[in-house]
Length: 90
Image (cartoon, rainbow, N blue to C red; front, side):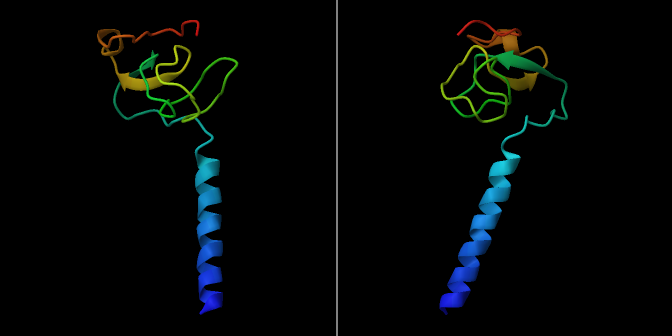
């Protein structure tokens, strides 16, 4: 019984490590026509970038970071309050 629990725990740890390694990359380009929109994401929900702060998806520490972006359908970024097609100073 103990060896089964130990095996299950080891498998869970291995899967968690694989998942965390995958999270350290840019988000894949969406299948729809998209544009990068800066300053509108929730903390930890960015798709990539922030000059001098982080370089990958999900690494933003604050919401609406003006140097981090998410993909949105083309033509919608500037319709969103706070959205910008270019990074701004934090």
